[in-house]
Amino acid sequence: LLSARIPNSSMVRSLDIPEVLKEDDRPKWDNKFQYILSCVGFAVGLGNVWRFPYLCQIYGGGAFLIPYVIALVFEGIPLFHLELAIGQRLRKGSIGVWNTISPYFGGVGIGSLMVSFIVSLYYNTILAWVMWYFINSFQEPLPWSACPLNGNRTGYIEECHESTAVNYFWYRRALNISSDITDNGNLQWWLVLCLAICWAIVYICTIRGIESTGKAIYVTAIFPYVVLTIFLIRGLTLPGATEGLVYFFTPNMNILKNPRVWLDAATQIFFSLSLAFGGLIAFSSYNSPKNDCEKDAVTIAIVNSMTSLYASIPVFSILGFKATTGYWDCLDRNIIGIINEFDLPDQSIMRDNYTIWFGFLNTTHPKKIASLKLRSCDLQEFLDASGTGLAFIVFTEAIILMPGSQGWAVLFFVMLFSLGLSSMFGNIEGILTPLLELHVVSKSVPKEVLSGVICLVSFVTALCFTLRSGSYWLEVFDSYAGSLPLLIIAFFEVTGVVYVYGIKRFSDDVKWMTGRQPNFYWQVSWRIISPLLMLTVFIAFVTLQTQEQPSYGAWNPKYVCRPIFLIHLFSKNIVTIFSYLLMLQN
Image (cartoon, rainbow, N blue to C red; front, top):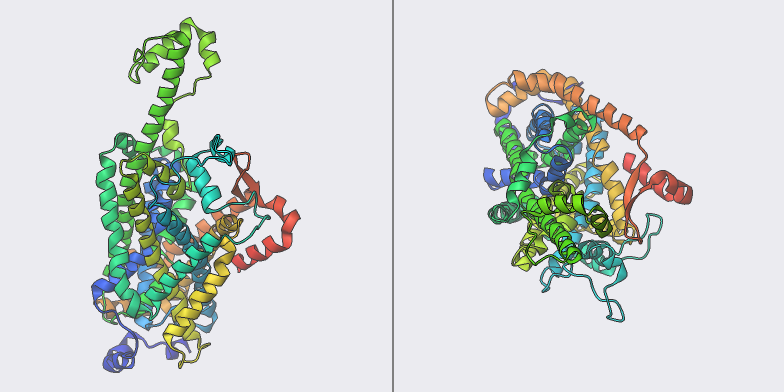
């Protein structure tokens, strides 16, 4: 029955002209460069300048590249090639492709559609945060550069004074965050407005599918590289840039003993290449049937990974600058304290000789030194002092210290918005194309109307992320919607093609499209290595999840960021949280 439903390569050769003519009504890319840019824009997103540097930082700098490259070669590139090839060959979106392979695999396409929808909700919310920062970047001085005065104008607002101006602006001015996830609060009007603007921009760019996104992608995909290059040049000229790059490229090989490193490297590939979302299948379905999808897959995957490395250089240069500035400030505070306590001449103690003076005075006057409660100044600690808030906390704090901070802030947030917007094009295409294939909407309904309905429904649904507890819910969605579901979908994709569609038939199709038979590397990766690798990652993921309590970081009104364990919240609001988590797992 499967053979009757799917034409093999010999049948296709005899039907070359009719098949092409039959698909003439399907939209097509204007040119090959537009298609490559769209795939690169979809794959290259916020994770390349946000998540990848963060993982490199916490997992031994350059040591993380080892599991990352292994996962890229044996998991990322083979799956990327498979999605491009199957979409181009069958010329359908995710649901159409898997229904064609087998009706039992239709759920794989629906799963991709649902993941694309859920990820689009919180991904565009992040863009709303970016827009809020972008709007505030035109103020002089930048609003997160100093704490605001209290009501009596006799001092700074206590919450800001006990924390930092950057943290206060992020948690209180931008998010107006609640103390935990059960305290939903009201909709924050400024976030609602930014979210509405972001969805309006997405709608305008995706109003006619690839016919409109293909034009916008020339800006959204190329502009971030221009800004990254500007930041690269500026970052390398900042004091402390060398220390940041040494920290990045110096591998800590002992960290590779931690299984979590290998797990995060494997899951990062899914985020980085946008695998299993359905957008790549949809994009490739608009290609000419006789397109070299193998060359495209390797090229785009390498460009994506090189972009991550390229973006990490300015990121770590600027983080090195921030760490060095913080280290110098720490030394200066200690020096002033010692000079005042011992009544020493000004400039008798400098940064260069501070260690010598401290050792001498600590030996001769230990009680006096102890009474000063000097801070321990270690450059390594300042380099370690960042985390997942890289874009909105660490980087914004570094920008304050740079001359012309207002212009750098505008450039940085425009770059982030462009990166996120081009990824949103792929997410929306992963929703729009499958919906058209489900035939739940009449063909008489214009594509502009359907795109508008998708964006409107997404906007209304995403309003939950603009509540005071919205960032907590976004963290829960990000933890559950963008990892395990994608892993499961990708596993069924490769097993469906190899063992249901048939690896021989698929190889023949690839040969018909590219003019050459898939080599030994592709065959072994598709048949054995990729499925086993994903199965291993799945088992490791589930094992680690059962050993850890689900938690999230919460902003403490007492100025301490504390972990809140979801298990304690179940007793307070079990129905709400369980329903959200159940929806994510489904």
